[in-house]
Length: 241
Image 1: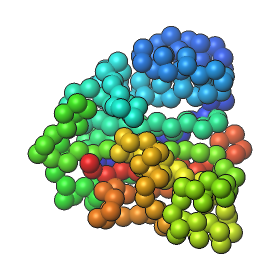
Image 2: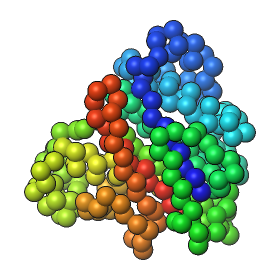
Image 3: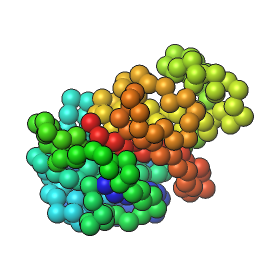
């Protein structure tokens, strides 16, 4: 499976572009974008919708062919080998798209990952949102991007594991490492489709990469990027369910 991640800035487009683009988005994405009252959040939603639409069209999928699970995770209806995850924070929008082979590269961007070693021993089948294949594992991905958030001791004490708390208490880069752990939990929640509630159930410790293991059926890839002079951290979670 190949995963491509592309990150864009909402500042790269003018107001006229957002107005024109809103009108051509699939209906489910227009509804999502219209729900935001904050102008920048609305722009991020429109830009993310355009990125999703382009990825769908490049891979022969109908941008309208999307449904949502109980936690709000968007999925393509019916059998598909195309999987996607979107995240935005302040000025940055990140989209990860995956297919199970390298014959159809999608969105060649700044974060291309070849996951063939991870899935070499896994029988992958197409993902069906309403009826997952009983005979094969199905791949899933989740991405989260965040600007560097200020270390929140009360939040950490309430929701993070003891190992995570100890690590953050003694690390020199509290804000960055707090953000990295938080994006990992968010990305995992998008991977499972259960949201941040699922992400808060596991401890990532402080490992920069967590391999496949008995506890979590997934891997984590961390990255950093600059958007409009500000540093962002993003985490991609991928594996099979």
